[in-house]
Image (cartoon, rainbow, N blue to C red):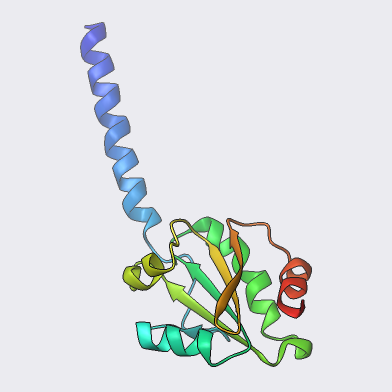
Length: 139
């Protein structure tokens, strides 16, 4: 009897865990209405990083809670007039995995800062403040 109860418990936990995964895949943020340029092709990505002296690319997944926590600092940068020559863009990993894989992005969020087409800074995870990001962009 005890053995059957354990098996039933494990099955129930597995069922709810798999439902949670599917729920987690729902978008936590609407990325269609912000000031970051959506990268939708390899050519566009190449152009953005090569044709701008400084470019920031925010690699994320819209279902990622950690990405959601980092997003406000990234979006606030786009409103800073001192950074008006910086190109700001984002890439939705689930839609453009090959582009992210091409620059070795393996986790979310990842912020890459390019200077004159060369990767200058790579920040993984959350907790990167507006001031920290701005400092990296200006120096």
